[in-house]
Image (cartoon, rainbow, N blue to C red; front, side):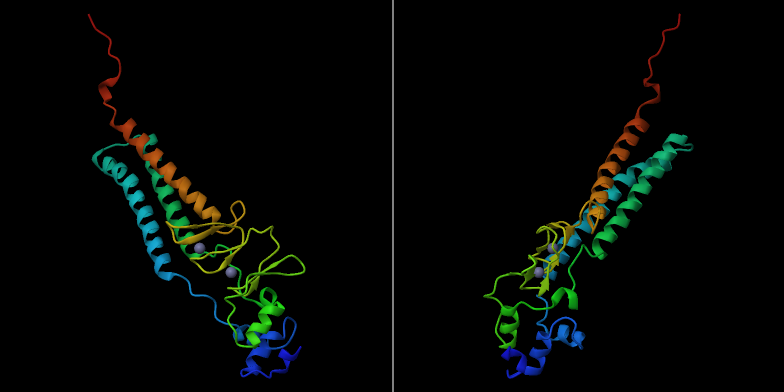
Amino acid sequence: MTLLDGSGSDGDVECRALRGRGQPNVEDDLAALPPLPEQDLCQMRAEASCGNSLVLFLIFLFVAPMQAYANTQANLTMLQRAWIFAIYAEAATAIFCLLGLMWDDPGTIKRTAENCFPLPDIVAEKLANGQSLESVGNVTGEDGRVFCIRCLVWRPDDGGNTHHCSTCQRCVCEFDHHCGVFGRCIAGDGCGGNMGYFKTLILMGVLGCGTCVSFMVVSSAPSGSYPRHRVG
Ligand SMILES: [Zn+2]
Ligand SMILES: [Zn+2]
């Protein structure tokens, strides 16, 4: 291939990107690739702020009335103590899942020698000529895998479940959706990726609501509401 001769204006850099897997200086090959597309960090941060605020607000909403009631009581029954322990355990689990959702990788396909090389011919040619890849669509390889033209990575053969998120601007395995509340891609098969955090967080919201409402209903029932027997 003439492109490998390095006759272009930036021949050395371009040819390193074209050598492919198994060749020396793979790190240089990866570094020679165009940068990853810019993420919409402004939108992601705004969404994440919304999600974090929502979770913290719900924790306060469910914990505060129970704790306030407990503070007014000289003695709590064992059941009430267990109820209060449950709401704090649910709140701690929710915060743990929120942190996992914010910081854990949902399954982004990283640029590595195995994921990037060999480049499809059309991509290698465009890069060698210093041309834009905007007019090039995703490329399907002979083995059926798809090469993302924006991330410049080969997606795994997972039945087409890997998608490129237009907000995060990354290819994510087992993509489910981009969550507009938490500003993160939600991905993973079953509880893989960050799906476990997401599902558990929602579960804690439901449980927290149930725990708080049931505690307040039972605890606020007037003690004299039991049926009275007439005497005499
Ligand atoms: Zn991609
Ligand atoms: Zn996303």
